[in-house]
Image (tube, rainbow, N blue to C red; front, side, top):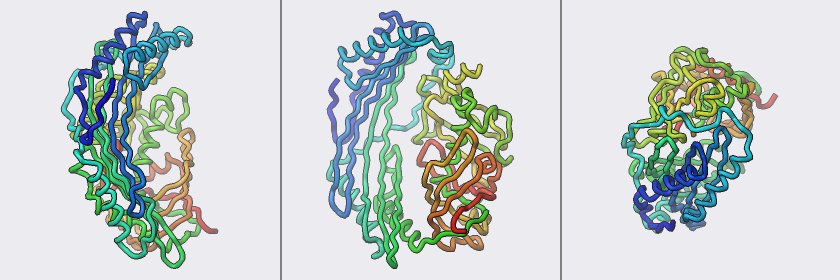
Length: 451
């Protein structure tokens, strides 16, 4: 199926795509499949990148994809194609069927239970095409970068600015009779620049992302924030090795919640590869910690009526009073554990960490003396043991105030100790993802620097 790419990123009616999925499912049934599921996605996008006042790239994207899984009893086969022509789809379905005949039997494979399928579909306000001509997108990127470059004479170079417009439609259907389509948009503005003073250089960045372009930060403000963050890092120094409190900025704090989610995910649990094994019912966080999922927030990046298997999502606490309420399960992991899917095939949906009533400045005051982390490097996180060690940069805090920038340190602890050692959670909520949280203050970590 050919799609016409337009500057407004408009889509044809979703019924055409639903028909493709329905036909693929019917073909699988005719080939003898006892169950089948198919997902189709179509995306259109326009991306512009500038650097030092000139346009580096202008890209129109058009991505099509159809994936189908078929089940012959407990034997599964999967295949995919980017060609939506009928003949290509026929060959894809046949390939999946052929594969299924050679795979080993797995008693836990198959569709999610029919009674778990979503039956209510709210308007989640997820589709807001950005009607801009390419030149207008170029102008926005240049405005963002020029604002950064002109912010201060110490901003001497740029890694570039970019503006991205994306719109997509996804369809999921299965042989339970579930067949739904969802239109979504996602737009972003970002900028990264380099600053120099006294022979030393630093770089930093900033960005914003939203489904609705009217809710994006102004291009100029994104550029100015990138410049300001870069300038704050000039004249960074190292620290001596010590133990001290650590405050994670909101955009990094969500990573801590991500590690928690990975540890209580179904795959980690049934493989027994988690430092939070059998964690349901355990107090992992202090009693004041509340972690709640709400997939029905209008316009939010993590909103969804159903997961990647058609299972209904739901608003519910994941952590209540510091205690883990349930695992994050798709249907396969649920069967492995003798449980039911929690609607998390594909991840969490607007998982929000409740604050403790302190804004960012109050979190600094609560910490009094310690390290504010604004950048992390490396991948030294082991969710099997909980060991945590990452390179970091940020600012040293004295007397509850930022004192000076810090670089080339390593922060280390164990995630269980870090979760249990949370002292405060800021009101400075970062909404740019499926995990939403403010700053997180950890009571104590090892900061490795100079001896």
